Length: 115
Length: 115
Image (cartoon, rainbow over all chains, first blue to last red; front, side, top):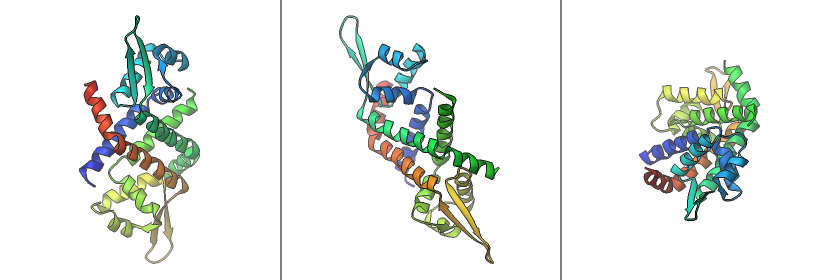
């Protein structure tokens, strides 16, 4: 195992940690349908607070998954969209969640057997 | 967000945590080629200790990803293979690692920009 593989594993783990919060995946899925403004996202992601949406978006932006675009209008318009990396990540993470849903009973049965 | 989704997220996170160790994915990839005995796995996964291989296999078995089959011979023969869930998980995790490898530069650039 080279150190490049170790870096990939570490970053993959951090990314997963980041997107495994309650809101990252719903936000990514909403943005997967197209660009949205903050208030549109806030309305579409039912139950999220203003503060939590800001935090979620900042985390995704930090990892290069979400792009934030400020238009120099008055008042400024701020658009959020998925980057190409974000579109690809959305598919991958949904795959892992789909796997978990599909095999949840078997996972829980194995854990019970194992004690 | 219902509690079922919360369970799926939590289990997906635990599984990812479990397979993000140094050895889980190489072991899954080796078993993905077919059933192997403990000593065959030990020889194929270069650099793994006996103890670490045992721990890795127990973790994967606990999550229903690896099946351990003891044949009643003298001495007993112990085979390891991936379950159907394990085969599917292998593809999913390799997908996330592939994503990370592909976008690593962009992720790191975004983090640098973000400060």
